[in-house]
Length: 90
Image (tube, rainbow, N blue to C red; front, side, top):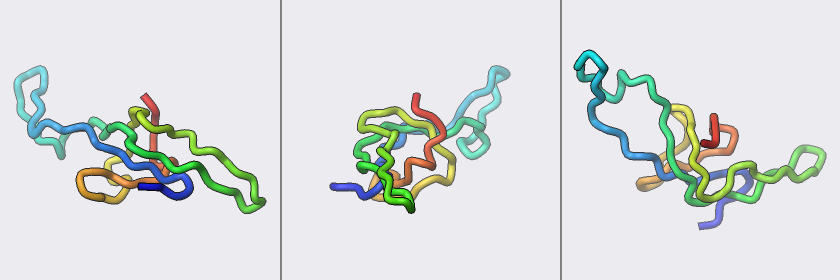
């Protein structure tokens, strides 16, 4: 697969069905405050500004990234998103 512009393909880390608080209370994933994370499988080359200047994609293949809960589009078991949707590279 060849990605265009600053798009990235991310394999999300598996999420546990339930998390336990220190007090022993079970929380579903929806109530958990952790941001989703994953590994970049493929990354596009970058994008051009309106002035024609090329900006290289800061996210590279095999980077571990943290992104917003509603970032990206589902594609099979992956998420397809733009580099600007990434909150941090870990």
